[in-house]
Amino acid sequence: GTNGYITFTRGDTSARLSAAALAVDGARIAPVWADLNANKGGIYYHRLDGRHVITWNSLPEASGGKNKFQAVLYDDGRIAFVFPDPYRVNFVGADRKVKENPPIAYEKVRVDDAVKKWHREERERPQMAMRYSRGGGSSMEMMKRPYTEPTEWPEFLPPYLGQVFFGSDNLLWIPRTTVPGKPTTFDIIDGQGKVFERVELPPRTKLVGFGAKTLYIVRLDDDDLQYLQRHPLPTTARP
Image 1 (cartoon, rainbow, N blue to C red):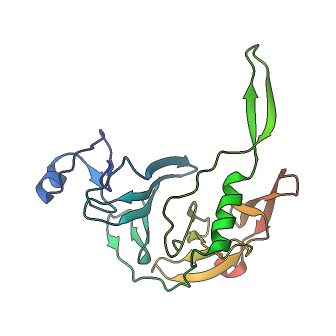
Image 2: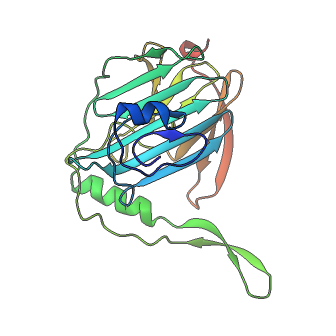
């Protein structure tokens, strides 16, 4: 649904916000229950290994303000709700009991000229893409993506950007927003919604998955070629 909930039998774009309508009009999960404008911002769905990830990105609310939040539904019945303002993580167990956790303290990153420059360069960075010809042939090329400068910048970046993961350690890994040029940092969240540990990845790498006691990252070289690497989980983050 467009108004901050996930439906299971059919979509719903109505602006009905009454509790009665929510209770009887089809099964759904409501991370944020509000009148959102889906014509601005975006709603994204990804099916990943063992989980479904739904992201509401900068959707304006009818009463003012914008909403950015994410729901992660796991095949074993767990659900994680990650909220940026205030930054916190709530869990729903396989028994359907909701665990509401306190906000997580973090250092805000102000949107200054360095952040805007980093944002522009990241969006304009050429990426490998497949080009198809009319004759049926294809080739791989580095292509530069078009970039449109935002008309309005927030005062601060949100506390996290990108995909969240449940690791094989049963802890939630959240990619934190950092100052440009700093390593990618993950908050590792325990079942109480607290930061269990913070982990920094090597420069020009990204987390892509987990093994039993390992994590997998992709490293980019100076030519933007990708290399898959395997590393042991941090000792303190193992179950």
